[in-house]
Image (tube, rainbow, N blue to C red):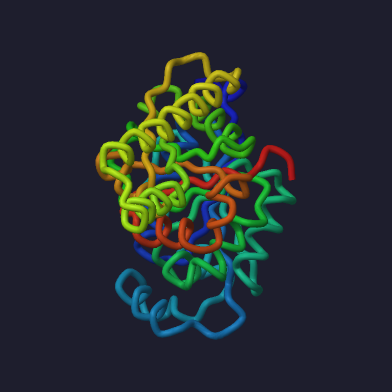
Length: 308
């Protein structure tokens, strides 16, 4: 794919020197190489002194003299970490922001420099492990104008199997188009978790009204048929996606059903839109985001609305 064809022009990867931020660097390098994109590795120095976690990890890879974190030494640390994942022929830019809140600094830098993708590790000093829901990554996912990739595992190959949960909103449509354009060679599968209230009502009717199981099954089948037609219309209206896309629909709570679907599909990435108008929108800051982002053992790519 040429640079002109790719939607990725500038990729920003944030590092806190943790193991998974190293995975994020590796993934970002591979994606930048494939898309002929510019890559910047960014570190935000927190206002407080180096904490014990960071000190412990740095001691494993750096001499003691590096632990006094001047700007020059931090730059050396970033380059040392990046050197582990060097991709031949890829030019990498290095940026250090002296002090500040990582979330706001990352967002400010990405907006100012027109970044197309932010990449972060999942378990670091200012990422998902540091209270993702409510702090750095959730703030970035909610406020960013560009997609955010949360990397949880060491990359071994390009993404091959991608689960795309949808709620039939314009935001989900935007996420699907993004998936098709960004990963044209990947096996995409759409997934919709039908409103769990349907299932709750059916079970309540069965218990309280003693509705026969056969009738319950018939009603459930009708609901799934309705949702299947909505899925077909949704795919048809994504005009930029000309390929046929397999999909799965189930009734249940979005969080656990998305995780189960990703496991059954053996996906290596879950790509989902944020701030939609369906069920995922109402639950994004609660059960869906919390469950998927913290419990799924997959990389997560969050795609914001097309216009913010």
